[in-house]
Length: 188
Image 1 (spheres, rainbow, N blue to C red):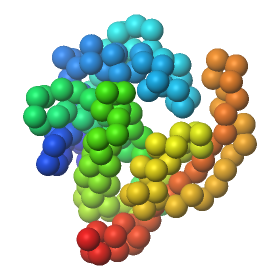
Image 2: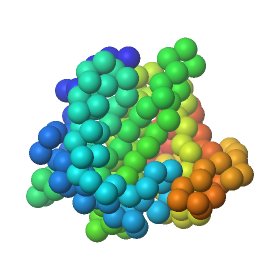
Image 3: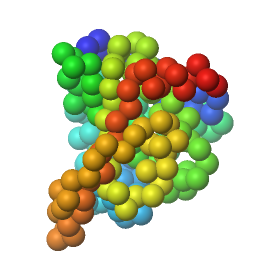
């Protein structure tokens, strides 16, 4: 994989860019919110140190081409409202996983669809991916809607896969193939 530390993707309302040290407080505000973290496989952050750790690890991982994690910054005011990522690359099989998180105040405005469209375009066109996979909590209706709107297909269900703070949850598995993505893009 190429280095991703200089990668910038733009959309009408967003600039997707590598996270910077100055993003730590915004990241902490997002990922310490229990509403945002409700369906994650990790607990809400309790210290800004988690944000600093993520940013530091990303600096190395992006430069090494290990994964893509881009902060979602609004063009209008430069606010960091979340992040989206491609990770767990399997180069031989031309596939990876997709992940994302969005500030509660930004929910319901179409930002995630806009960001993931740009990220998927990049993954299929520039990285020659054949398949992108997502693993979500099936109770997360908003995430399900986001994935299905992008053309992901529900491909499986894993019972009681995660345990977080004593709560057991399942996994919904979704997949999107390059040919299906390209057909959707051509139809638009």
